[in-house]
Length: 583
Image (tube, rainbow, N blue to C red; front, top):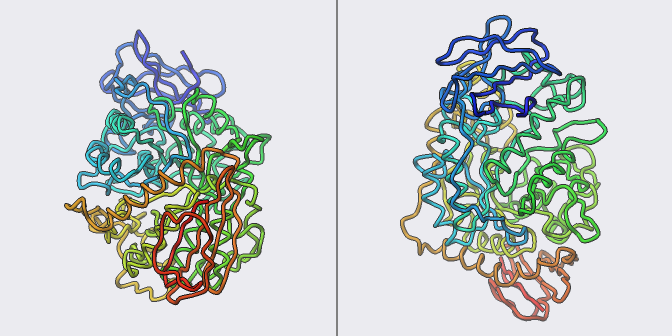
């Protein structure tokens, strides 16, 4: 029996309830049914009570000294949302894919999805119905946007407040396990997006009874999460045990850690490194991968050992590759896009080396950004031309790339899907979905108004912004506008094209990546074209790309051409021409 873990523990003679509440002298347990019981104080601020009459399905709250009843921060399920009672959940599950050990990282083709808008039903179970589509497309891993219990009926997921409880609007915890199991039966890995840099603004009661936050650090969301101040040990355990919970109990194949640059920790061992080490220990021989989002482009998190294996984190979302390809395809140069415009060498650097900014001054930030990434393999980076942020943080949440000319979009897709970096699609991209993906939330009236004003201020900086046409983030219509409209024709031209590219990747690119120590890239530019070579142990992969509207000089390398768009004559490559060779 572990008395210092978060959440209830089912035992042979009842349920052990526990709450870490060092700021409370007395805590009571309110059971439905079962009445109210005094909890016994334990070591280090823990309060405990064994309820013999409780079991799976029992609902409960903790009552603080002032009479306020709060949910369990380790709750496994919140059937009545964030302010309601927690429910005891039986963790056992009959796995049909018990022998699944995961997939090697180099085989990964990610597909990011949001449970609430991926299907009309918007549930874990309805998502299962689309897994065969993903398998036929060639997807080997899905990445689910955060599911931790959030306030209201709809949310992107980054406003979660109860990190162990899958949101009830998506289904029950066992439904999420069914989704993971069904994916594994189709040899599809499952990654979960988790948020450890902040807690949402509504429904987080923990600061009332424990030192969850610290003024020592600030974050974009207020006081920083306390990972290194007084009482930090159990705050660290709250999130580390959460990561282990998803990997072990739900058999996730990996986690994507949101905005790790906002996780501040001046302690002896940074939370990120401790978490990574304990996750890898718990993985017990399975292929489990940890991915970061890191605005600072800190390559230290992606370090490899002498055999080029990750020492902490497997890969990072490469925003730089998105930005250079987005600018090339759309011509947009506002905001941070300006720092990626009018310089084709940045396309080469993003593809060959990973980061565009490796310590150089970035005008948009007004400071230097990034560290050197030239020594990292391409598999340390995840490339994409769409994701939830880059679509949703636009005034209309529009998928701007869906409206660019077909020849341009085909070229961009061919570049990133056949690159030795790990590709990631955003749901619906494969059939050129036009549905927007705006930010949406469902807070109380006061918070909804604050969000509206904040979004209006933030988006007003964008060219052409019209406050009168801004989508209301709290409106139900905004949420429903993001739901995918699935094609009825599985032979759709864009689906066929994406399947073709993914099949080429499986045949020509994945075999090159099995040697983790290979893949160093170099690039050259000529006019508006870029040539890149990645040298592997026995082969060299080359790309010549003209991501512009005019023909230009491009020295197409020798070797076997396995993919070509456009014409290449007399050393000139036609607009939006792409040539991939292997020698």
